[in-house]
Image 1 (cartoon, helix red, strand yellow):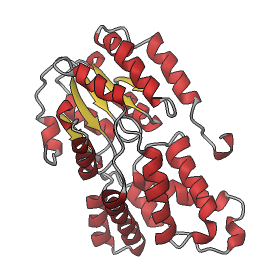
Image 2 (image 1 turned 45 degrees about the vertical axis):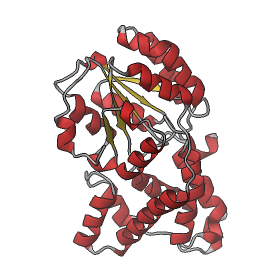
Image 3 (image 1 turned 90 degrees about the vertical axis):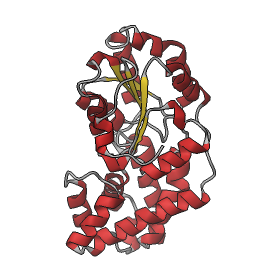
Length: 295
């Protein structure tokens, strides 16, 4: 499976009458905490010289990326939110540390571009912004660090069993904001890339765009389901007008087991949307904090 384009999504020919999109990090793979705490956050500290406020930076970054309603979002808006929250934490102002500038990063995040290293590199070339150049340097360093030093994390067994159960019954696709090369590497390492039709990463746009491009005019709305572990996944499903099944953070294995044993058949039979979906979404939304001090 090679790198794909947006046109590949548009040209996808259904092999089944139903479609299931699945997120990757924190959903199929229990990689969210490992990637964030051991790779993303240390590189933020080093690249911006934030050693004097390491504890506060880690607190804020873990909240944004693991515990908040913004969990699982693209790395660039997550970095922006981390930098904007950092000055609110006790001891940061008194530390005297120089905090990162965020004006150009905000403009990039709000540009409407598909947020990824390729579009960021183009913006650096277009604007000459040192601020964006530093963000790009950090993002590329994260990718290298993960590729070289992160030990493979196996997928949840019930997630793999669920993907196998879908074979011949639903077209499955990875819908993610992780860089595509990293996605391909992880799915191939564990021999599960053949269980999905397409692996779509951040380079192809938002998750809602992935779903729209891959399904529009080819599947009935009530035959499309997105599975994810973050509010951004739920927002993408709502934007696309399709059903959503939440993988509960901290209870991922049990969530997948229930999907395998019960929910998938309910979805195929047209019994998932309604009271069953609403109850699961209410529990999912209660589990995530909107403010840092709610944790």
